[in-house]
Each structure stands twice: as C-alpha cells, then as structure tokens.
Length: 215
Image (spheres, rainbow, N blue to C red):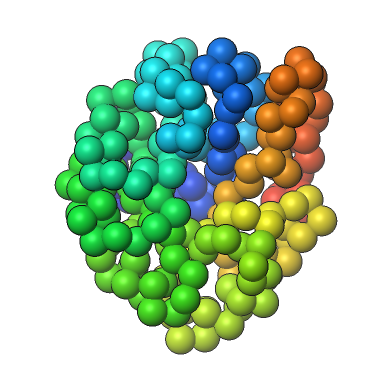
C-alpha cells in the first residue's frame, strides 16, 4: 500500500480528481469505468453517492493499484474508518472541523480538507491536511489561489468547484497542484442517458488540457 506521501504525490502527478456524485451504485461504477477508459485515474467517490462505501469496495477489488481511489464529502468522524475498510487510499472533506480532521488523520491516509478563507486554509494545513481543498472554487476563481499563494507559498492547494476545460490552465498557472472536477468532467446526466463514451471523451480532454497547462 502506498504511503500518505506517495498518495499525495500521485494526486499532484495526475493533476485531477474526478469528484463523483453518482445517481446510483451501478451507474457510479460505470461512470468510473468510463473515466478510467478516458485516462483519469484519480477517483473520489463522495458520500452523497448511494451505497458509497460499497461502491468503493467494488472499485478497489476491480482496479486495485491501477487507480487512486478515495472517498469524499466526509462530514462525520466515523466515516473515516468506514472509508478505510472500504479500500479508500485518500479522504476528502468539504469542511475543516477539528474532530473530523483528527479522525481522518488517524487513518494514516492522505487527507484533503476543505477551506475558503485564509484562516481556514492555514488551519487545514496546520492540522495536517496533505493538500488543502479550496471550496467552492466557483466563488473565487484562479486569481484567489494566486492571492493565497502570496502568504502561503508552501501550502499545496486544490480548487474544487468551478473547474472547467476552459479555465483549467488558469488554475494551474495560479499555483494549484491539482484540481477537483465534478459535473464538468463526469455529469450524471450522461450516465443516466447511458452515454458513457461521452464521459470517456470528456476525461481524455481533461487529461490533455492538464498536460498542455503544465508545458
């Protein structure tokens, strides 16, 4: 099993985590299959997905070390241990609540906690967050990451929300180490319509856009 540091480095290497809020367990697994076919290997199954832990267990058995598999939208401490048992290798929360963060860190996995204000960003990092999730990114834009990098050049940041093919280059230029992409990358409407080939094509475009942004 990869160490916390190795997981964090993988997130940075891949550059994108697909934040999946699937409409059902079955469709979520098919969404992940389509994303992987398109080249996206960082997968975050949110707790707002039906049977989320069961989905992660299924994916962990199916793909193993081929992908980076984590659980997101953690809001309760007990979810951290459940995510470990399911096979998650990283944990993500939209909030920075001390008791929750400690429970996430106790698992030994890579942890990404949510923050928005400078005080929250600093707190998330000092509590032990491997990467600070700037959420919702749609409220701030790439310029906000650049501004935060002034006082906090040493804090790795990953915006989630508001990331699209059109602006992905701007986020990396501003200093993001990776991005979290949800509906722009894998809209559940495509899954519900059975258009998984379009999800794969979209994943491929995201991977290409990140490679271009990093040149």
